[in-house]
Image (tube, rainbow over the protein chains, first blue to last red):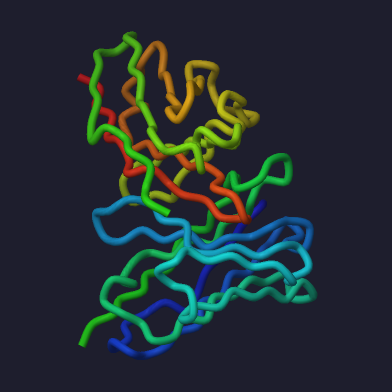
Length: 120
Length: 110
């Protein structure tokens, strides 16, 4: 079964840091661009960041530039999101998502999400 | 990187058709034929239902179709069914490997 499983979410104080991880099974992450997409409670989806197959090309939404860093370890079939200087507005469910090989920036496989809560 | 504009809600009776619009700019929707759509039921992860404006992934019913004109893309759900009641989001490539989602539309089956 193809599966993406996120971990690392939790409660953190404003200004703190968290590292999210995403482990894949049933598929090889190294073949695809990968993204993180988030959804604040009761709100819509927001694309956060992506990374190419080799890890040399990354992009970020403006609101997280300089604070978040996406990376991958293809040998471990895993994706990561290092989140620093966290703010209340970063509170959301974070989804690990595969970008469809057949077209850019379309997300065909989603994890179940991990909740990040930024609160004092 | 402003969110694409979708209507907050649309509704229809079983068997009817509903259309959800997704309006962006020439820098995203209007500039590329890389619009995708997602269905999300409460408490669940989104499901991929349309890509490249009007293509359906394997397993998605042909009741779902897409189109685009200028800076506005549309999702059409024909023959509305009870299980189609969900939130729907568009997404467009916006250049330089980035993308942007729509604001989301709640579909209600009356």
